[in-house]
Length: 91
Image (cartoon, rainbow, N blue to C red; front, side, top):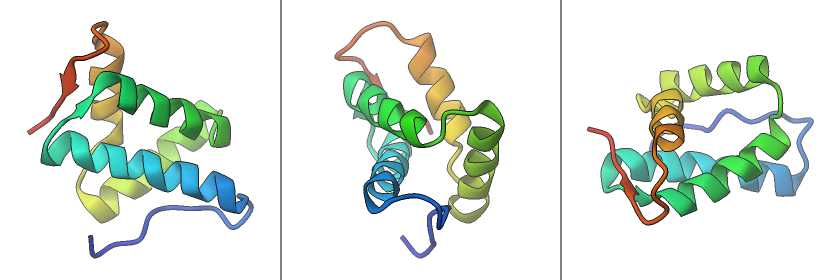
């Protein structure tokens, strides 16, 4: 990818890795699909770093501006699904 992920300089190295892995999972949702359980695990780690809704919206918006991928829509589809082995995929 030819863009930078939205990260905060206040985050630790481990937190930055968790956020980057979450955004890589979002990219997979659009590129080839990802199992629901894998996306859920990455989202849980992301929420440990970005627990607030307001900050989540801000980071999601920044990510969409640079990548064109909507983390919001991917997470919405994740939450609508209840089958663990289901592949989460968006066009």
